[in-house]
Length: 95
Image (tube, rainbow, N blue to C red):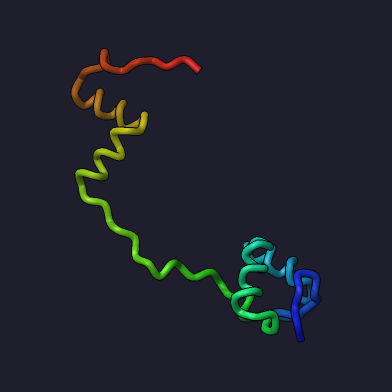
């Protein structure tokens, strides 16, 4: 059976369209269409499986990179200024 977004299927005792099942599980229609293209349009259980994480491992930040990233953010600047006791270096930006 070929499945489409509006095909009615029963999964876990609930009969609904594929789009409704995907929405209930937090899967967007674009993701569901992508899975249908990649995996085929015949097995609703396979298409509605939980999302797996990327297989590519994320590179962990070194301590110096983490500190640089933190200092670029307003909260990090404020914490650095408080720690150094140098409030005059902060500039108040008006919206």
